[in-house]
Image (tube, rainbow, N blue to C red):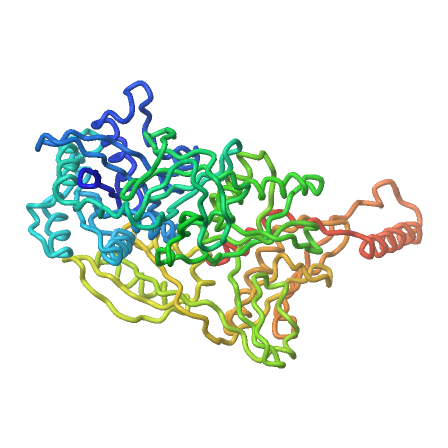
Length: 599
């Protein structure tokens, strides 16, 4: 009976207590026994627990006996809060009718609270605003309730005040879900349409698709079809999350569950796709599907060349679980064989790096991240490049376009000046400002993505003592005066350190990089020249001095010609060594590119 079903999700900024609230709801409804209870039940990855963020969405079914005497089936769809996983959030919201908006009583409204709130408005969800962490000494529940009330246009007294950690007033949240969130429409007689809002890979059952059934119903024996990939399959099993996977015979409209597809990769079963029945398919898929597009690219190389095949296997396994992560083989003169990988953002890249090192015990080297550029050639063709080393010769290029982003920064008004200074230094353009609450300002800028991916977030946090929060969306590709900055060691270009920079920044960046590299490259037995070149000319140079062996140590007294002979012999040896010598570049040198702006 769909009238007794409620589907909802929890939206919040990172670290506002979303996973803790989910834990309390599971405990209150008895969905999980006290013995199995751990903090952050739904965050099953070690990394999720350590970083305190939800990376993968998950779902769970609970049963609640409401005060009106009825028993309700409540499906919680847990979503990631980080901006890199925005598409997953939008699909999870589509699977619900309502959302709990969690705001921290000490922090107030932040950028991702607003970004996710607008997504919830777009998905036409009913909102249940909740203020969390009222037990903390620094909590300001009344002030934050005023802000939330004026933002949503509701009475501040109707905003629930809870402490998920202490379990204060959490039962009111369940009551509010039952009373305020509408039940799903009963459409079980229509052709089947189910939305895949997440998926993960299971080595026994293949890809497990998390689905919300919108129309129709299906049994485990039906042959199902994917709309986008046009593939048919008979499920290995279907079931619900309680919170572990529990097989059932059928799923009907309004319900949330899973389908074990038996597919070998997540690519065959994409998030946002619609499942229908092969025998009587629906006329069109559910709206809103798109392929997640990587925004940040970096090279991944094994530190030990022999681990290349192990690294490839590790990346393939990671891709089974994460369809938005892409990679292809590439070679570098300096680093040998490796892979060019695409990520949704810098945080996504950090997660992948940690997972490679932890789960597969591999020692890897990541090159400095770059973004995807569009290059218009003389023959009017447009090519996309995601590695600065791929940039064609300048004489063949008409223009280079780089991706620009819309960014939204929410901050206390005291930090208005430092933020303006930071964004304009990074080639940002100020658009507008709004005041979502007294003493808080929302600043909207346009800024090149390449300026955000390195250090921007850290600098924003340090300039505002951690109070500012950031959200960003892709805007468009724009033409600008961009050129390649190359680093030459002993006359050989180091492709892994190449970067595409703005013409005005090339000289300063080149100089700063050379100064850094001069200290980082270990001294050899011969002089090593480190140069930066851009726009066809050398713009900076430094020498790494040779370490000299004292060949005169054994030479006591005697004629000066003996000493000269030994020194000449040493000189010839160094010359020969310089021709065949290979300069080892440490990992620090590649990270220096990331830390350029820290001075």
